[in-house]
Length: 329
Ligand SMILES: NC(=O)C1=CN([C@@H]2O[C@H](COP(=O)(O)OP(=O)(O)OC[C@H]3O[C@@H](n4cnc5c(N)ncnc54)[C@H](OP(=O)(O)O)[C@@H]3O)[C@@H](O)[C@H]2O)C=CC1
Ligand SMILES: CCCCCCCCC/C=C/C=O
Image (cartoon, rainbow, N blue to C red; front, side, top):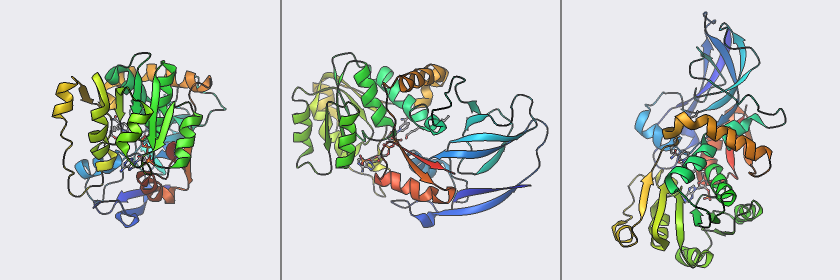
């Protein structure tokens, strides 16, 4: 008999999540039936979408939604071998039982030397968000100027590096000087700390006096209102996330986008990465190749211990992470 530890949503978040909103429970797992397998989580992901998702789709007492890299520890399913690592969407749990249908094996050519946690970041959902968002929503072309915010995070840091690979000029902003130094280190042409600049409008203008062809927006709110006015004619805005609004109890006013949208003939499109589920393999293989060739650098903020998942989640929402926030069990 195996006892799983799980984190449940004890109380719906009001404003910024608090550790008291979570409850750690122990669940006895039953013995395996034919066709089933037992898995243990090795790395778990904390992601911004969990905040709005919990509000819309979860009830108090539900296990927190989430993705993990897990190892098969017992198998009564001939298609799955003990010891194999997979990506699962089983929520914040140390152990779980699966019939195998919802599991995705790591790419078969995953090198031993590469941390498997990257399957939750650059070579996983956030990396693919950058890849498809830039290619299919921004439709950026070589020589264009790309702006990305939350640029030192899981998605943003990949957006900037992919845009460089594809021949663009890249401007990024992030919430600390250390993050800005990291952006410059990984090849951003211009980077600034949005928390300390005297004027966001001036900082954006200084970084690219001619304006922006593409804006990969992870933040929303006030940032979008300011940035939209610095788009070039026919510019494209990919609405990827709106993290500045996720913890609002009272909805923010605006942005009032109509005038710049009309007069600059802009395109603005929201997207969810799962739109390209049928191209997941293409994206993962491309990201794996570029990471192995050193063209895309990865940084992870690793929190040790399953018990610390709520703290890691809250820390990520506060901006304490550089790169992808993951938990090592
Ligand atoms: N559409 C889709 O399919 C997907 C969308 N997303 C979205 O992409 C965005 C980035 O996600 P991800 O890369 O995983 O997370 P990150 O690794 O970027 O972590 C979140 C970061 O957001 C920044 N942040 C937090 N609050 C604010 C604020 N009020 N204003 C500006 N920045 C803030 C912080 O960085 P800093 O120190 O710079 O403030 C923090 O580190 C999120 O909005 C997320 O919801 C992610 C995956 C898929
Ligand atoms: C195999 C992992 C798939 C996880 C899908 C999660 C989709 C997140 C969409 C994010 C939206 C905004 O943050």
